[in-house]
Length: 210
Image (cartoon, rainbow, N blue to C red):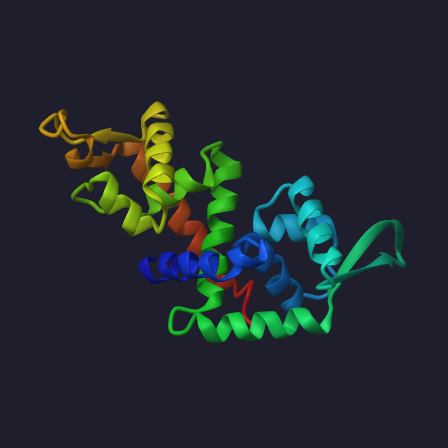
């Protein structure tokens, strides 16, 4: 899981200058393995809602990475395929992400999205829960473990606390919140297990493997 989080963080860094997210890359990688999928099939595979998939493929189509065709068996349905340039982008991204691998990064991205839809907890909060060590951690330590900015981690911690999934270990750092350590509650550990089980299922399913 640590390697997957590092790979996901690196993917975010690499694609951000182009205005993309790992979700965009997940759609591209999925279509490179299973060409000619429709909106619903993409959403089910990646744990994304139909409106989110529509926005992603529209954006990818606008920059010439995905082309759309009509399903000959159902004229109401669009099918999506990659353009040549998309394969080149995935190839370069895969080279840049060694040794952790693009497959692991996108599997984690999908696991976070699926868990978020199932639980109503944000993907960032699911990510913090997945990265939380057994002995507890400060906000800074959680930020580094989850590969998130401290502001995003703090927001995620508040969401987890409201859901009774995260709690401070003690009040020793009350005067300085940066020193306070946080740990998952029983409910939080169940969330962590859900993310990890979803990740392992996607990896074993080889959803992103070429």
